[in-house]
View 1 (cartoon, rainbow, N blue to C red):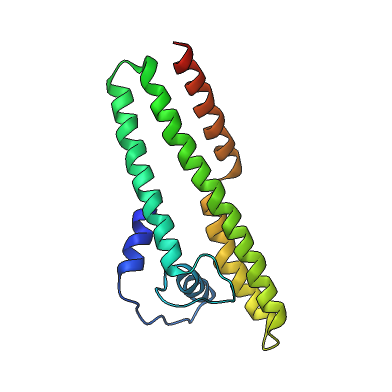
View 2 (view 1 turned 180 degrees about the vertical axis):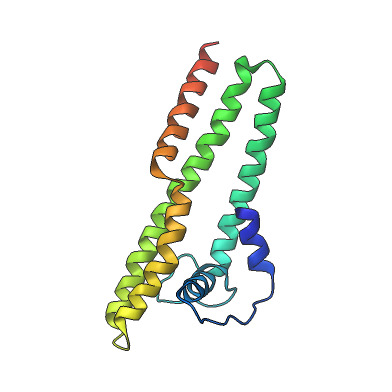
Length: 162
């Protein structure tokens, strides 16, 4: 998913014909996270450039996780699982940081909507449709996040006792 975000961020912007509701949702997500210049609302933390930086870090963490997973799988796993656990915990920490920042951005977007009297209902819908789906995807299902943290801690503990 991070690779797809990088490709979309680095591809030239294209004209979007917003004839359907989903077209408008796609445009809102693109303008919030993938458009390379400018903020959509005041004090926006995740503009296009910041989001791209976070996505690059995700990409490298995921590549590292795959390499370490293959390494652990191909070796005697008694001590190697600690390395896998550290990488998994780093990804979980990164997930947590992004979820917190996206939540703060959603609050800032709603504050901006309340201060703008043009069309607050439409603007609130744009905030919700642009930020909340990305927030849910970043959280990767809250149950799985807790499972990953628990598994990483258990494997780290088992590796350190071996």
